[in-house]
Image (cartoon, rainbow, N blue to C red; front, side):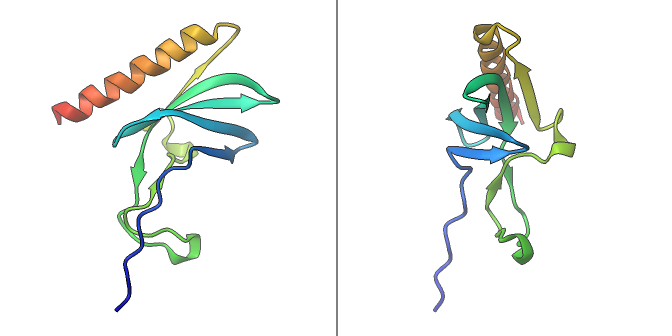
Length: 108
């Protein structure tokens, strides 16, 4: 009898497109990450957590595995809030978006 493996969760830290990402918070639906370049936070990203509906052996993806939205899904399932010398405002906007997404999910 083969044991089913646990679905992969989004990592607390990862590198993508040349940036380092560090998870600040998450719930079952969305997450907030710092986007870091050269040891400086340049943006905050809010993402709707994607969950695989199919297995893709080629990419080592199983049903239930979590992933970050793809680049072409950005704006629909992912949002970037650039710091532009005001990281507090960017973080506040990111947290507001995170809360909005959670409220929207609860209404569905």
